[in-house]
Image 1 (cartoon, helix red, strand yellow):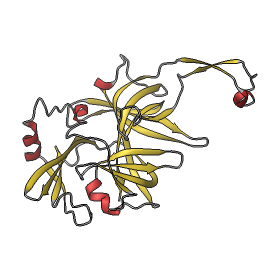
Image 2 (cartoon, helix red, strand yellow):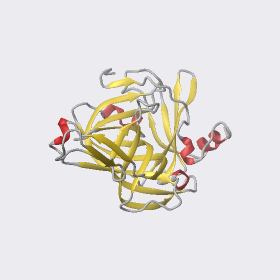
Image 3 (tube, helix red, strand yellow):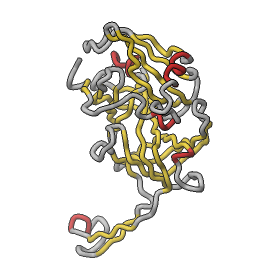
Image 4 (cartoon, one colour):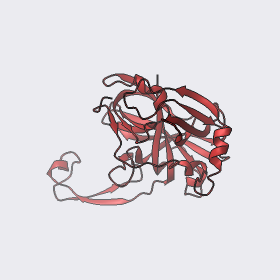
Length: 280
């Protein structure tokens, strides 16, 4: 394994850490695991022959409830020596996400060996997302190679962006740019702000972000698995000097903290993790 490209995650992850989004609580309802496995369909069988790390032998990824469900769970079962292990359990969403073209700069492999986060270089920035098809795709990953990726965000909490005033004093660097005098006071408003801020240095994982931006489109979606409704908002949140990227973000009604629903052209503020898959 190329240790410069494939890196072992330095963070702790535990089974089912992101299932709250789809109302699954393994601590309260551990019996649900048997039901999930028994009623899942096989997404893909796989062997470990393409990976030099001998973390496991044979295995399979399962989907619940159906392959074409717009929301559900992916379970990964592996055989390690003489033990059968439930190695991973995480939610997925179909019919959501936009396609992007970029390069893989790093593959961050979890201790389980079956989960990974992809660091993906876009033209103006980098985004890290949890790869839902890591075991199927890992043999195809290469550095300095362009790939297509479908990426979307899943929000923990979202609201309208509040307009705050920030008072600053103009220095020499900004006096000419804003046609102001050095020492003059300026007031900045945050109500129409785009922001894409990683949270890995403030307690979050490397695929978690704080996002602000303007909604350019919105649709309401009934999720198959958890019988919830969600807003799928396309948000202009990543900007460069001459370009910008929009991302689709899933916001369940329970995670929308306002009395009125999100609207097109409104600015919103949220925290989310990003999910995706490299399209091979």
